[in-house]
Length: 382
Image (tube, rainbow, N blue to C red):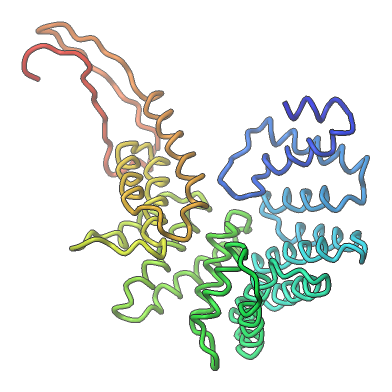
């Protein structure tokens, strides 16, 4: 057990501590919710690390992530900046990663020009150490931030860098670098990048899951931006509107607002004739968000139905591998909820039983309450 290995105070303790922090703080954004005991362990781990490794880059980055999980991204920015100062010039790759993290935190605060500058610094360091992997992603993230800041010339400059990388004789580009190539290919060679801001919000909301780290004021600013992008979709641009709705629903999910998630999803997920286009991932994400919201409202049957619709979308969409962790976790939760919520009754022939259900919610009762009934053994007509 990792906690036992860490507490042994051996040469493996730092590695065990780092792994524990990454898991408990959900470093990979797979939707893990730490228990109260695990959060207590996080504080113990960071206190232990600060005492033994006060200048550690890795543990300072985890301290920054802890602040972000507390919705104090400004404090996370400061810690990440301090972490960068402790990295020597002989480690350009590590510094490049540090600037990427700092860029993400600044973008979460809607400090788009600052974020673009940090992604540019990351790109410069990758070039300095002649490392191509990650370069296209850093360049396109800088371009996206410039687009959000309405700096079209700077965005175009960074997109041209991405296109230069595409000419490199390299086949094993990472998925995020491949995504950067696809964005640059679709972006105009000249003039403003009209789709840039919506793609920037896609990175911020879905891929980085940044809304769950925002304070209340920034979260409202984010929601307002997403609503503006949804309303700005041209008449008849069905897929663009679905994408905007999917991000808005995911933002409400990250804020723990099931009623708002359902309001967005139910307005967007209207079954039409023919098979829906799931290739851009908007419909699968809406189905997942809807399933989460229904599960939060204890509507297990509805959540199961929404997840079934999610699986009907197949696997050929960009977000599948990222969403699969969250879907599996939700399915496990629903299975546990269904089992825990069931009562077994034995009713004799010509007999009856009355069951009273206490529905939680107080003054905020749901408009509809459902029960799932399963007959395991019976005689005669039912």
